[in-house]
Length: 112
Length: 115
Image (cartoon, rainbow over the protein chains, first blue to last red):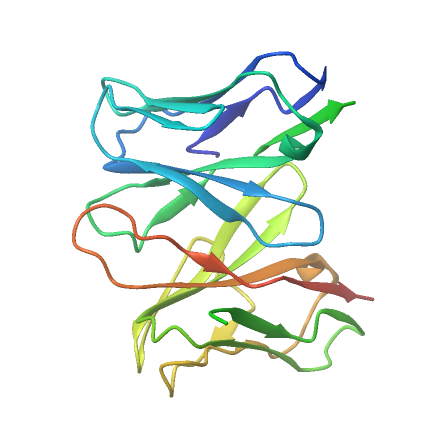
């Protein structure tokens, strides 16, 4: 049973469009991370959110942690082909990170 | 250059033939972890280590062994590989934090096929 669910599973959009991907759980997480993984490579950390309701911006990417710390969203404005990749959310179930859970990922394809 | 290295990158083997995938990091990280990645399932943690000689099971440890005799190395051992262990494997490392998650740095992955 997946403790972290992501939607959509696949997303194909045109360059310049906006998009939002979601990470949901019935469990509370002490913190949540978003990673991006490109083909043939390991995941690379984009952001960590730790406070319920927290919003962080990274250029055209906006990350939000739900008030109840059970969900998160990633919004991309004016998507570019370089945004193509697999987006993974990862939650720490307790204050320590020895129990990190990854979601199944959202595969994003941005078409020029 | 700070990095996590894994070897081999690709491996084809047969059922029952013991194999080891090596992992090494040069960032003096205390924490190291192994994951497997399968389509639709994301990354699942196999084993992790908080420091030298300290290891613990993740969510899918069956059929795997690890050791942490040195801080920089964390090999993954498959004593008797089976076809259901065909997967993409990632090693990761990070500092030990206090509270929120530290950044995990991932290796490039090892693609394993067990026939």
